[in-house]
Amino acid sequence: MPVERFRTFEEAKEALWMLQPDDTYFRQLSVLWRFANRLSPVKFPRGVFKFKTIEEANEHRLAWELEQGKKFIARIHKS
Image 1 (spheres, rainbow, N blue to C red):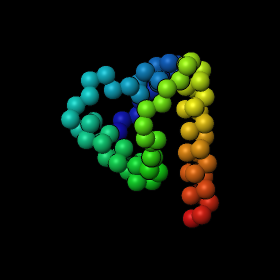
Image 2: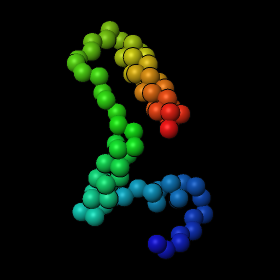
Image 3: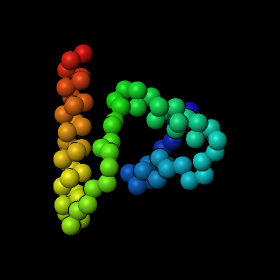
Image 4: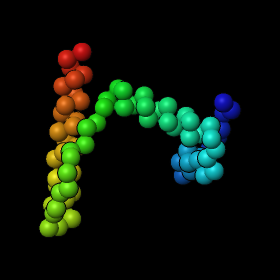
């Protein structure tokens, strides 16, 4: 992989994006996601949830994400 130099953080940030992905990119991405799922599988809650406001929905999602984080940390500490 060649070394790239950037004058600003914005230039470096833009270089991270793949604007024209090819088949190799998607294969690598698939391998990465399968690996991540093996390391830390996520089980999404089943069903449909209704919320009166977007704030209520955001609070529910945040609570779920925090619970997932706690489970992940508990798994790490068991090992």
